[in-house]
View 1 (cartoon, protein in one colour):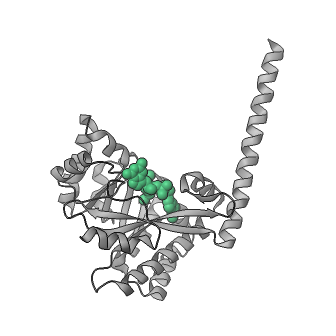
View 2: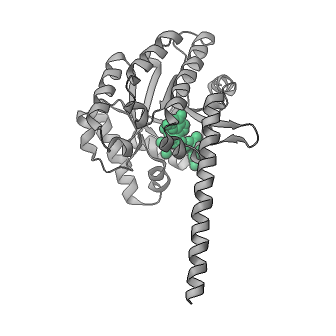
Length: 281
Ligand code: C2E
Ligand code: CA
Ligand code: CA
Ligand code: CA
């Protein structure tokens, strides 16, 4: 039995070792990708649930790996966060998203261009000068602040340096940039905290949308968020809408906006304008 235990221990050690090597390899490949600019953005429409028209698009990063093809963020965001590589990557994401909006504004009739919403990691806020980075990027792309929204996840906001981040968010908001709380409902914040915060949009996490059709608790939560948001003059976006039942229930509850595979998966940059004109017919 002692021998067996020893073997098990060795196997466990080997497993840990493999995992560590894998993470280190991923980290150095990611470092290379950041230096070489091996990323691209896909854009998922955020749709008016009644009219079906796109109000904006969420920019979602992809890693274009020379050998492995297009890799989605669930496979590298965590390592990017841990290593701090999310900071230079995030800077590129912001710039690229704004370049794309300025292109939409160039080709679409005045007032028709959708906004873009960009995911921002708390690590980016911790870097000095994030607010200036946003201001500069808006300036040199010529995109008005109203056409940019920043998404920050609720769980990350609950951590340390909260006060400084809220102060930066207030400044950005005074500039006209809109602020969304992402994955709402998954953190431990009460609905009440929305009241005093510089927030424009609440994005309800997909897990609640999945479950609300069949169980009363998530339904009550979604309905509570929608009515509170209306009282506080916030906009609500429901995430992960995959079928008509979700959409119909959300419309009944008075939820104005949503995104999900029912409308469209994230689109390549050249597919966005085609999708917009198609949805208009
Ligand atoms: P998220 O911000 O919650 O983005 C929504 C994710 O749900 C996207 O996955 C999107 O493709 C997926 N999705 C959209 N509609 C549906 C649906 O109807 N059903 C299902 N099952 N999934 C749907 P994606 O693109 O893989 O991104 C995953 C996460 O990676 C994002 O979650 C976000 O937290 C993070 N992320 C993506 N791009 C960036 C970025 O540029 N910066 C940072 N910091 N994080 C990013
Ligand atoms: Ca998001
Ligand atoms: Ca989300
Ligand atoms: Ca999420």
